[in-house]
Image (cartoon, rainbow, N blue to C red):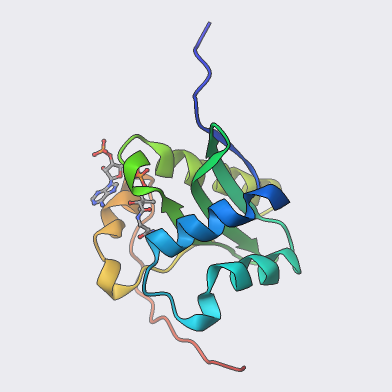
Length: 142
Ligand SMILES: CC(C)(COP(=O)(O)OP(=O)(O)OC[C@H]1O[C@@H](n2cnc3c(N)ncnc32)[C@H](O)[C@@H]1OP(=O)(O)O)[C@@H](O)C(=O)NCCC(=O)NCCS
C-alpha cells in the first residue's frame, strides 16, 4: 500500500489563522497594507472559503487562495515555507486548488506574477501554465 504523504492539503480552519498569517508574512515580506495577511483572511472568508492549507504535524507549511466568479478562476498568494520548498508541495497545492475550481464549473485558471518575482514563472510552467499576451490593469476603488 502507498505511504500516506506527511503533508495534507485541506480546507482552511479557524485554528490555521496564526500559522497562515506567519506563512504569508514570511513568503511576502513587502506586502502593502491592503494585503496584510489577517485582513486578507477576514475579507476572503466574508465572501467564500477557498483557502487551501498544507499542514504537516499541525503546522501550516503551505497555502493558497483561489477564487471563482462564474467566468474565470484565479489563484492568489501561493506560498510554501522556505524549509519545505522544492519537495513538490507547491505543485500539490496548486493541483488541489485547480481541482476545487474545476468542481465549481471553472474552465480556465488565471494568475498574476509580480515583475519582481519573475523566477516563479518557471514553477507555474511545470504545471502547464503559459504566459499570455495580455496587459494586466487594476484600479484602486477604496
Ligand atoms: C513558488 C513556491 C510556492 C514553489 O513552492 P515549492 O513547494 O518549492 O514548489 P515545488 O517543489 O512543487 O516545485 C516544482 C517545480 O517547480 C520549479 N520551481 C519551483 N520553485 C522554483 C524557483 N524558485 N525557480 C525556478 N523553478 C522553480 C522546479 O522545476 C520544481 O521542480 P524541482 O524541485 O524538481 O526542480 C515557493 O517557492 C514560494 O512559496 N515562493 C515564495 C512565494 C511566491 O513567490 N509565491 C508565488 C506568488 S505568484
